[in-house]
Image (cartoon, rainbow, N blue to C red; front, side):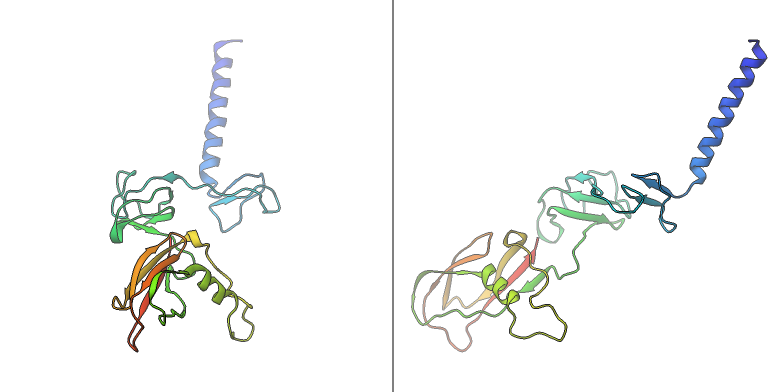
Length: 214
């Protein structure tokens, strides 16, 4: 094989390689997981088979955020970035907890579900007719019981409220109470409140309880 023939073959291979690269760059839509074409509205279509169904999911990058203001572990805030945060860190309004976060270009924002991420506990009765110590109420079970068996509903609504987080999916807060009547002993991570009754309640006695989705 002479030099010109070898050179011609090399040029043909280079040309084919260049055409392949150009084709890949020009192909704006990509399917990952199967050999079927992507949905016409998707730049990237993840599907395991040609029917579009799948037994696998998208696994986001797992990172450790320190707070919503700090871009770390990235060097700067990148608008549109999605991650799964694995840590509970920080304090106050910039604290982060495990879950999906996106970046606004200025800070991290947690991706919350469609339900409100905090709510007042439904009304329950605290019997203060007996003064004593170490009374308990399972706040979560009282809430779940009311949401599972509502007294009335609108036409067509499900029999029970359709979404109930688990007890470990909530933070529990007592944001105010009548300290002349109640003494708070403890409040567990599962929502069990232990309290003392110091005297009978008046017409103005209150105890306000808030649940916050983690």
